[in-house]
Length: 242
Ligand SMILES: Nc1ncnc2c1ncn2[C@@H]1O[C@H](COP(=O)(O)OP(=O)(O)OP(=O)(O)O)[C@@H](O)[C@H]1O
Ligand SMILES: [Mg+2]
Image (cartoon, rainbow, N blue to C red; front, side, top):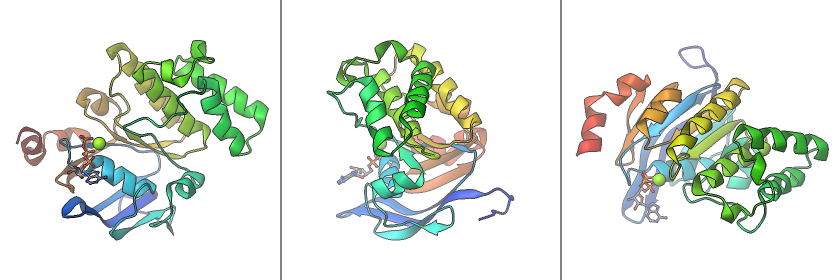
């Protein structure tokens, strides 16, 4: 559980591989996420970032490799089971209850989790204020802007008691002036002990909040470390331009 640096890893992925027919979308990936990190994942379109997230979070089963969460092997556990363990996620193509209201989208999963209703309501109100959706409580999710829908999906995973939260392009489709609000919310939740892994094409945004950066190209991790060092790594620059 303790790494070389003495930090506690919550997630350890070893030799993870996911194929679609002849396409190797994720190729022998090794990575570790430590408690309290905000890990950014960058890489060109089609490089396997979403597939990596799907395979870790249980949307897909890996073809090879293992996944450990808090020292327990969870390689083949499905999405719902991993969610119950505290692994939350959002989707590049949102998965909200489109016809339900903002409030229902937060409270229905919370009640299924058998959260105390009053406490869940307080938590939902606070999270809605953080992402400035408190004036949209009774709107149907489908009537929100894409950015607002992403924020709603984001706080929904917090309502589900997620401790390690995977975000797939959380600021895609955002109005530029909403990005800072999202980043501030993420940092507040981070300060409360949540860990994050975030795929993002918005480089300034990811550089602002990431404590570590992982670069992926053609299904492989090509750099992993200090965000500035990874971002200026010649192989990473080449992968983006090439
Ligand atoms: N369900 C699927 N069936 C077949 N091939 C797939 C499937 N999902 C992804 N792929 C392929 O796997 C590779 C990686 O795709 P993936 O969506 O993981 O990339 P990505 O890095 O998330 O890209 P983007 O930045 O555009 O979101 C691509 O070649 C893609 O076409
Ligand atoms: Mg993707």
